Amino acid sequence: MFKFQIKYLLLTIGLLITEVLIALYVHDSIIRPYIGDLLVVILIYSFFRTFLNVPVFKLALAVLLFAYAVEIAQYFRLVYILGLEEYKIARIIIGVSFEWLDLIAYTAGIIVVLMFEPKENKVVEST
Image (cartoon, rainbow, N blue to C red; front, top):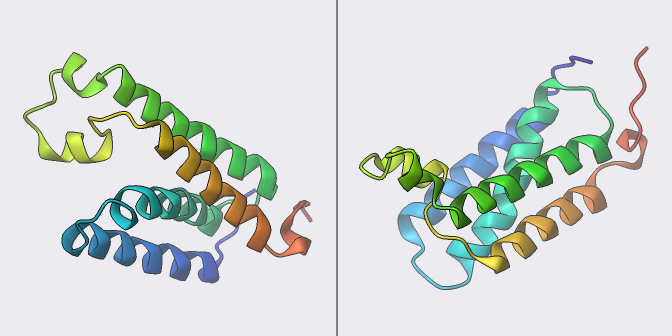
């Protein structure tokens, strides 16, 4: 179940740097909110793929459901319910504004993962 894969670590680092650069320097209405969300699910997927040798579809689905859960938490204003609105890191990680289009961006990101993941990795078997 555990297997370190350097290519996914490098992808994770590259995506993390890209996300930070977008957050710091891109202030538009397309790339920052939607491309950033598309990339973040790929980032999360690649992070877990760095260490886990699990079927691609199962991991992709788990990441997508996690992203949906975070967005739903934003809908219910979880940061405010938990009293964390004063903490910038909580507002960044959990988020404070629900957006239906974010769900589409997350879904598109997972579709990209499923399209580009090597076919031999679609079903991973333990040896």
